Length: 159
Image (cartoon, rainbow, N blue to C red; front, side):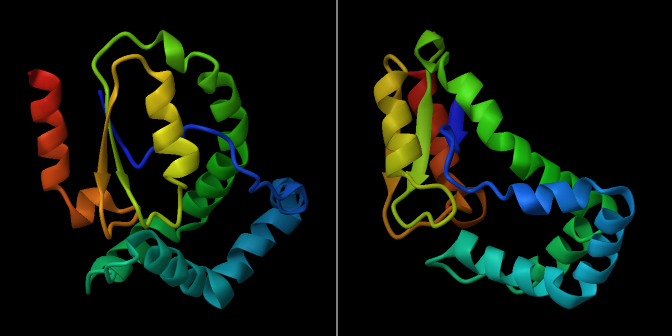
């Protein structure tokens, strides 16, 4: 198993007020409808800059991401996923030490989305026999910025 910039443990990022508003039938839909043209594209641009940091976001990536991620259903699904992530990670993290397959974890030392120290490094100490690949000057978007590291991880597992 190759884990790339894994979110393995819950963080402190929960906003119950936004969740309640988004789940309200009329208010939530209205918020998504009005929020998209006003802030969603700008927030996406900032989030991508943070995800790719310290590298730049590729030229066409924002355009592609906007078309795929900023639809009403996609935004609602993303928000719901973010709200349930911490609960899922709390439950799953209790079983990491039971993993018995070969595991390589790849992480970037400049990840601004998922803390390497709080996730990848910690996870590597819990999964027996797992290996950690630390990429220097690398952020969260490892498949985009360092795809060769995934190949390296697969080679490590196959040995």
